[in-house]
Image 1 (cartoon, rainbow, N blue to C red):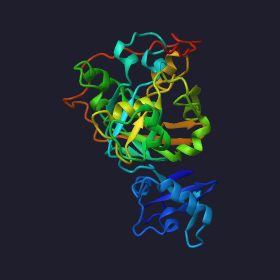
Image 2 (cartoon, helix red, strand yellow):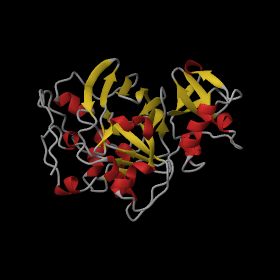
Image 3 (tube, rainbow, N blue to C red):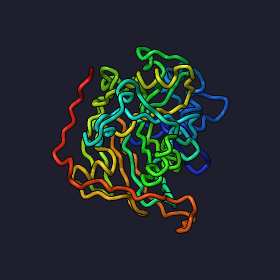
Length: 339
């Protein structure tokens, strides 16, 4: 199934996307309270998806059905409890083999915590960070946790994943590189926005594309209709989705609605596009960014203007940022080599 959070103007509600129609889940299930997003559905119980499948099969003539064009889709998870963003693609991690990664990167899936308070959905306008002049996108896939757990083994991890969605990890590269020298992670460079959507595709629907713990899908990005990465292979991750869940939950917990991002797929950032010879550049207000992932759909956002821009802002970027070298990785083809 494809689960969505939709709005007809009266507030967000959970829905099921079937072709070009959205069916209201609250009414379909006869829920006592409004299910305002996909997380609310998942929180009804570990068998929420199965119950919804049964209700769909049985049908409920009183459940409202809306044309997709008549609703606004929002982030499937409006405010995730946490967003952990990993970096499991070696091509991105090594910048097409132009830098060497630490031994720890190969030994375990590395992640940082992003900001669940600044989540955007399909077609939303995402403000350009006011203190940055190097706004980047990151083409990622995310999974959503559908069952709470601690110390989950990799072999059991798919039982905890409710489904998958597209994840745009908007990144202010100049802020990120400036503060990362201190060693606390990307912090403010990743603080302003994450986009999720357009829907959550349940794990069972994507099962034919999941092999060896990896999602075998093609991923593409376009800016103003122009491709900046085409058919990047989602299966070429060094670490698996199960390894991500295991690492996230070890000595901790994952909760329903948590989002785990896989990190940028190979070629899925502007720096990589430049190095591969695309006529790419840092994003500017008015740019339309589209991510397309096989089996999930298309996530589209427009970059909005800077808000309260202050050229004398005291916490602006304080170092010179080296620009990507155009064309240095033209013709580069990544080959996954596992130990």
